[in-house]
Length: 187
Image (spheres, rainbow, N blue to C red):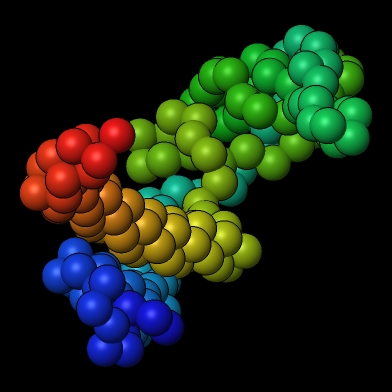
């Protein structure tokens, strides 16, 4: 608070830094939540539209595994969290047999019947986004927007602090140039 009080030792750079901190604090309190909300809303609506397009262009079909699906472990810090596998599958479309490679439950044996998703050209594709994926992507966008504002504010604060520090060093050098010769003659 000493930067706000009248003080003969207070420099212009101290006042500028104090006002910058105040303005950046207010900006951070207003802009970070606003950026978060805007990012969540925009991403949610975009991903909802995308999920709707995917649902309209993809259909689930029953397919039979032609070969076994070898396991590919998914590891995290806590260990194995699940397994997935890819296998060649066969399905029928209007009497025509189709084959493709699809993600299936790991260690599935040949002949196992599973559900896969195909696009309008009957090519294997991923399942459409579900509501959980839409919410997760929206939340991620909100966190990223919030973090972006915080990082930008901290960057401005750091830049102003460095400029203030350099200015203080320059002012101290000038002051020492005025006072230093007087002290040097006393010794």
